[in-house]
Length: 214
Image 1 (cartoon, rainbow, N blue to C red):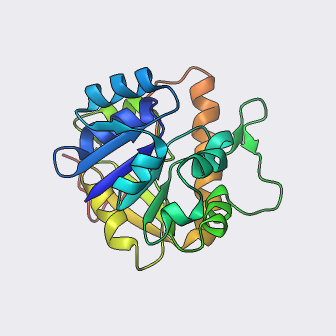
Image 2 (cartoon, helix red, strand yellow; image 1 turned 135 degrees about the horizontal axis):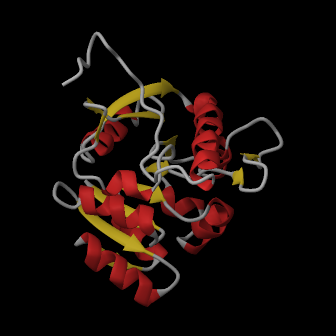
Image 3 (cartoon, rainbow, N blue to C red; image 1 turned 135 degrees about the vertical axis):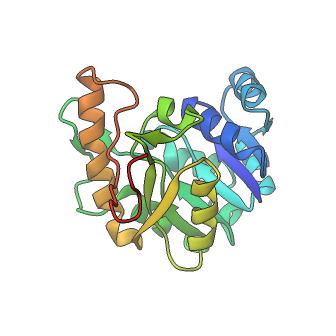
């Protein structure tokens, strides 16, 4: 697959570094030098948001949650995402209250999907921070990390591949009506991280009958 990433921070670099061995990846960002450095670290290509949107069959929104809709416009607006699978990795969380900033009971993912009506939008990779995605092992307490995600059935195979290719096990929660639950769960992890927990603190989905302790 061709994967375009909008954002050049730690999450973009970590995920791109995992994907580049099986896919073509382009990282984009507002700062050309920072983008170049991130791409070199991940052994990926680099460009502008518009170039990444033209490049990718799959688009990953890896900006700050506050910047998502500006990033969409920078890439060319909704038309630039038409026909693509779009992966939202963001968490709209207030870091003072550790609660969702969404006031309508709907997820950021649903708002993105509404803004991109011709794209297939879903949510993944939002429940752990950079250090986890940089981990080459992806096992915790002897069990492979499970990544919960939301996507419609048409995009399911793409999300499954992206998650498998970072070394984790995919587990679909359902459609984007469940994305709010993923954002709320991530807020709990974020609160513990800000309290000083290890950067590799995660929720893992334990399946004893399928994942015996090694």
